[in-house]
Image (cartoon, rainbow, N blue to C red; front, side, top):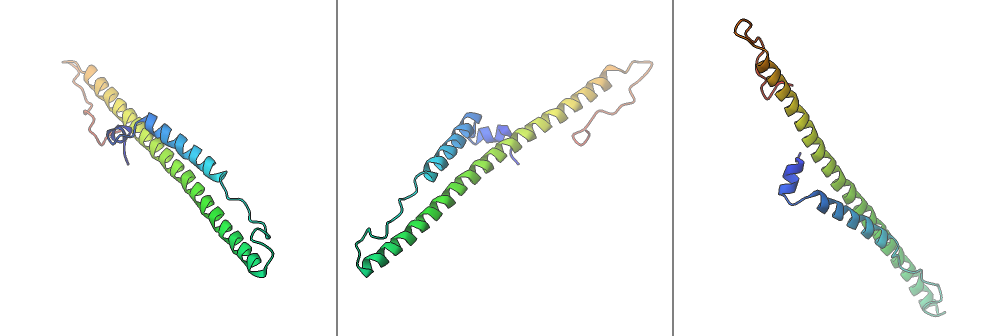
Length: 130
């Protein structure tokens, strides 16, 4: 799992992640609304071969619509993955910061209380303590 600092070192700033996510949303919306028109049965004429051609064009259109829907779903999933990566990175940073602050408070409390007549009984925290 990456921290937010590591993501920034890879070039993933908050601004860039937000821009990418907006781009993915916009692209998914644009793509979703760009489905091809239906083919009317008489588009190629009235001859039997023309009607068959029209039927094939309708099937081909449906394949294109299915592919567009798959691409839209993929863009939404990429958006979710990117958002999840950002949230996990920020969570790691928040958790690490809280752990470090807790260790600092324990160390300060331990170092602040001893006197010559009353030596400290506490042990300085280590990285494994919480």
